[in-house]
Length: 192
Image (cartoon, rainbow, N blue to C red; front, side, top):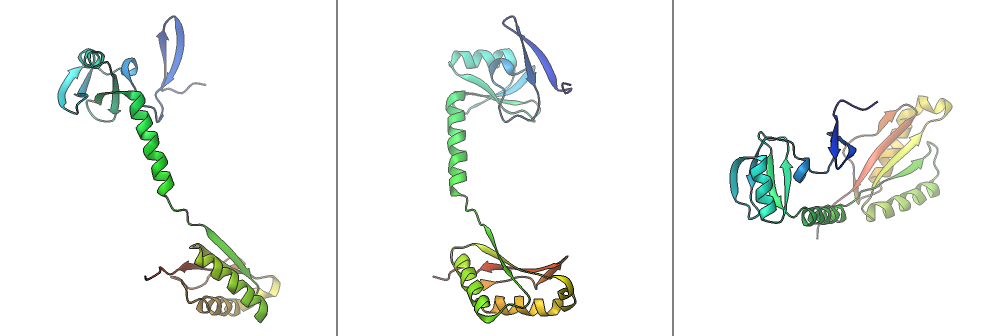
């Protein structure tokens, strides 16, 4: 069933369904249905509040597109610009922003309550590699059966593990969630 925001538009003898949903696409030229708009010229100059016909004529005279850039404003703000170029620049900015994002992954190291020294050291070395790579590490112990009665021993193991890693810092004490106790280790920033 179509939603309430669906409109039927007659276009060149064919029916096209245009939805007024939350699409990222901006309304351009004939898609703009407002009576009055605040017009910004191709040079960025404010032209004031004009009728849609005057705005469309200004866009045609400049051989550019009329684009509604702020549909929430009253009256909506429209700008005369080259829409293809505008979209290209927007996509370029999005790619650049995505490229500059640093993804921090949370790795996990699982310990047991009765972990032996060599196993402890092996897990410690692997966690040190994760921290050196800049990842956060969640160290967890899963209690099985009667081990739940000895959750204090699990907290001691986690604290000992955190203290054995000088390149990591932690902001909270070990947390018990159900049968799992965990602590989050964050790499300390390098002081160069």
